[in-house]
Image (cartoon, rainbow, N blue to C red; front, side):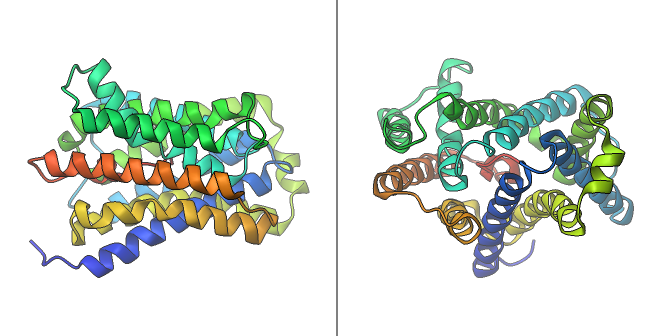
Length: 305
């Protein structure tokens, strides 16, 4: 076992948050000029290709999966989460969308109690209530976010909580690198026929500028590399060390939103985002403290890919 390198792990996890925020910002930027379905398909195609090369080079793991039904269900859940995310980012600012999506760890707690019948302490229930209170502050009437569009990040957080609940039960059965490949492949197999049936891809790509094509590929590169760096971060530092830094993604999203769109959250939105981050980080910390086994990268990840 390699010696822990906490500073490297923290650096990697901060980079993960920035990459995911950059992906979301790019999605919001390109959405008005390119079909969102094209953005979504490219994101999964890049992941499938990159991970296929990764597994071909790294002979320690392979393409074979012992649990194809798990991989299919996991891939579909993540694909639905991505659909909520990609389309939702066309209607909501990146920072606020990211903050509401960070309700995922609290949603996992809720599902554990209601579906898996796991005991939940009063402190955990208080954190769940606090997180949802933070979301209400962000989407309060008068914020400009109160409307049907908030269903996108709420749906995103809900489906991703289901995804994480499934993954936490079964992730130890497969290599995370193999699983990452099958997730990209599942999304690609489902999305590619749908894209070709509904979008005239040739003329769309021919009309796109070189910059737009580059940003399109950047979406896939950011999502894929972020999750690979997440795996590497957990290989050099404990989850308990990394967890507080996961929520810096909200700050990265706010910074990129300001640089690209000239928009910053207002005071009460900052308050709501801080409440969500604090409750989510505390809830995830309790999960780590309770765990008696080495956590997986998928259990740390509170954001959709």
